[in-house]
Image (cartoon, rainbow, N blue to C red; front, side):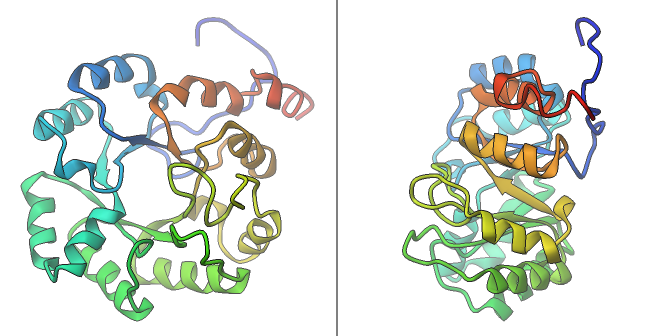
Length: 253
């Protein structure tokens, strides 16, 4: 850091499995990636190229190489996995991961319906090739799961081979673990945490109020995802109690 301050919470060092920040790249140019990395590489643990943006992204290999040179792994959004699956192209998906040298993959069923046993089979098979991150929850605002169901699904996917499970919220932060207003479904989160270790969950939290809520609940080293590139430095100050929203939270710890 640039100068010394007392009573700053301790962040886990990279590479880390808790306190992770997953950034959502929705179509940054090569120059924008370079600018982003100059400022935020130190605080970024993994980057997701959102949904199926990788299909239409120009200079994709060059972009992946920029992140690789910065030591930041990249994976393609779960919607791309679903796009391959619904077209009966699972083997093509696996070959595509190899073609682009990806070491991580996301398995989700937010846009299509996959029997959960089959989803777990995909997780198990893929985990022999790459590190799997699976996503629980639907992108359909009308589909609301009971807490016991979230717990059941998360447990099964972790047992099948997922490294982390993502709690769905979309890039807008108004489905899944949130109400359509963006408010956290607090009872749901509390129930999940009684059964699923916090370090195994990445909470999608694109909005500042959501990030603040999870930091206050779980601590500075909560795993947060779907963070916009421009929000990386602001989020790190939230984690450290250096923004008004969390200013008093860590002073007496």
